[in-house]
Image 1 (spheres, rainbow, N blue to C red):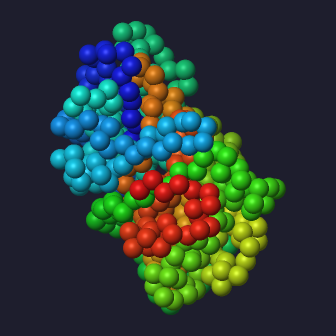
Image 2: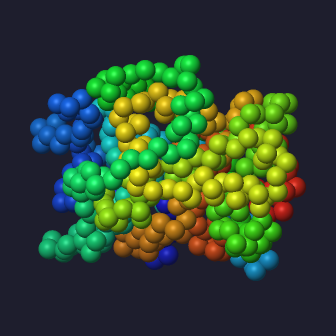
Image 3: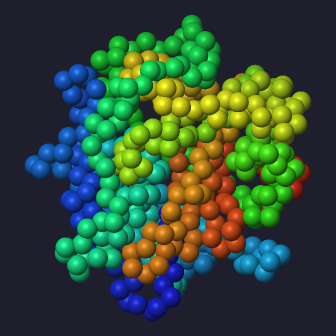
Length: 436
């Protein structure tokens, strides 16, 4: 969710017509896959078919709220004098008259691109909500599409305009690259295979695409929470954990331990495993162009014994996470592609394990702070505030940059009962501010 502020009193600010026409142009000229529909190819694998007579058109609408946007803001004043604003999505759904926003799924005739432009009474702010199917676009590709959409919108009056960084749409570049790679099975794949050895779901490879297309949509997980870390507190955390490690690893180590402690308090039992998951963009580890427009993100998972996490220092936990999650490569990625296409039962086992329960503790960190989201400019400047819509998995966490004070916003998907324990953690509160 991108929150823009009208600083010009322009009556056409973020015009729905221009936004719509810009989206249609970028899809027609550069991203036809957005209006395609899923099907099963002759080899039994899923494909997206773009049929001019059966397009899956974007779902675009403008909504009005009879309250000012500021009603849904949370504000904090920090030592440097900055007053930082945050958008409380849960309050918005409770009090705005809009109880939910649709998710793009590509299935059952749902649109593969959903856009909502939300205007507020007596307020200069406008919210742009965008949903695309993750099965087609990863974060890198989605944010590139949004920036290209904004560029097309800015240049609607210039019919000959060409994108500065047009996408590479040919999936063949990925197939050709991975044909040169020898697969190596990642340790976490073996872990989940061994964990579910007696109960792995067996599905013939030729039936996997049909099974996934027939699967019901997973509803969004609505128990979202927000923590804010100022830049100073984030650096303090890294120094306290291990100044030789990255900020992400220091943050992951602290969260892994504090969420495990909250988990133990909530369930009154010790989980066997504490899982930490980092997605990684394989473009950085292959010859596939950075402008490739598909999904080339894969996951690295650290399966840690919970007792070891509980007894270990943050430095030791960070090192253990690094040993698992930094060993990413195109060889691992090719193995994961094979698993998706041939051993779907391993993914099902991972899916039931990566959660917070009496048996498992889970931290899944998706870091989008370095993606150029603040540059998405439809002609009026970039967004003032970034917010996260609901996402589907419990335990997932998303890191956004906050340009207002240079810190980060951490959106956490955990049950409210678990968060009640987490937000009382002195170790967490030493670095983070609980927003909601």
